[in-house]
Length: 282
Image (cartoon, rainbow, N blue to C red; front, side):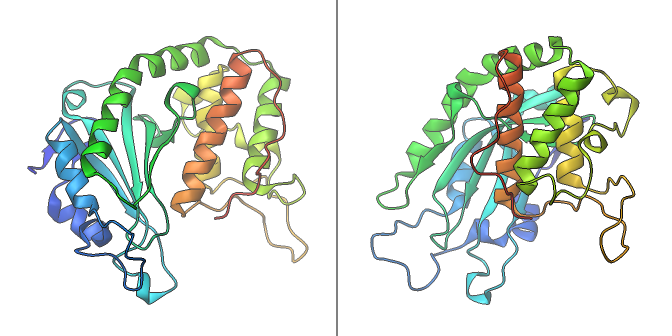
């Protein structure tokens, strides 16, 4: 892979992928796994997607506590079609691949959106493109690559949803309620949350100060994931409370999909209901 830069992204070279996520290039599974486990290195999927125009633009690897998992742990790669790299757009659809070589998860394909203004990497939750799972037992790597074509077919639907979010103006009480439910997605209860809901609605840049659902969702998502926002309240020890950045792959994906689901319910005129599984681990 050649390194290709433009206004929106850089196609990551193999050297960069190896440096940032060595587990992508594991040459075998972690020791002790069942004989039924079919080892398919993520690097093979990267090559297969590349043959169909998908280039990696972002990668991360899960932190580990057990040294036996080093080099086999969960990793996430975001891909973009090479033709999308040629124009400057506010957002682009991406393919999000999650995998591990320690039996920690199945191969997972998600639909994602990268928003250039805030460098947000969203993950879409929609009935038209629910996450595609592939168990490692009897896994056919070609099936993973072929599944990426479903995302290409889904791209127009993503554009329609973004347009609906943009056209949905939020009253002050609706925006507050959206932020309140977003806090529940991450912390489970408002008592556990370090900030008030309206703190999440604060914009980090003038481009995000609009009152539409799309802008509100991105403000809330960025503040919950990247952290650093505070309403200057203190805890029982007198320390100022603030939102800490999310670092776990699962937590970031779960939060993003949850926020997208909340936005869809609002856009469809439905009520915001408390999430079933609320707390998102950091």
